[in-house]
Image (cartoon, rainbow, N blue to C red; front, side, top):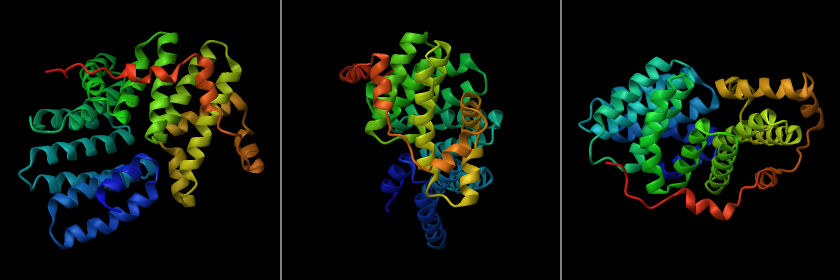
Length: 301
């Protein structure tokens, strides 16, 4: 697995595979004193461990990446290391530190850095600010990042941008944005965003009194999470389900289905078919309109 394949694998949820490969590559880069490669693989290890739920290890990998990046005369690599450190702190729910590293990344990112990286940095700032309860800051970052993403038309970032934008919309526009985000996330196999979108759609369905739709959204989100957790060993699976938003999701599912929900799931051992496409269709979203969500205007200055 080369670096590009590993990047793709972590987006598609193969966290254990990526971590195993990253550990080998980190050892090799350290032995051969290839600092740039060391930083890249440490940042992938950071992402894999934080998504598994090993928050302490994620912080350790991110710190090592940042220290290694500081030995290089490369502002973009250092900015990426700050972004990785921010993600680890966000998983640990230390939003002050996370936002501090995001600000440092934005201050040093060079003009030559790819627009995709700039967009990712802005979206991460928007999401972290939103989780920290800083809505004005979140909206400002999203305004810049969203404009850049819609010009770039990169599917993964576009789906993430639409998901974030839906937090500010009224019910009907938000449902359509979430539906578009889900359909786009499907095309690039982005399960971490897919389950969060379904959870959000379920919350909106509950507000509208659409009980069946809420149940379908929660069940399909749970399916995605169980699929992600399946390859993990018992200790990692425990950490996986305890990680921030996933724990909150489980609490909401238990409130809806009752305390015996997970016991019933374990006993049945059979998943219902994935009917998320039907859910999206029932909302009234036309998938042929997806191209309209990315417009070829110039990026913001």
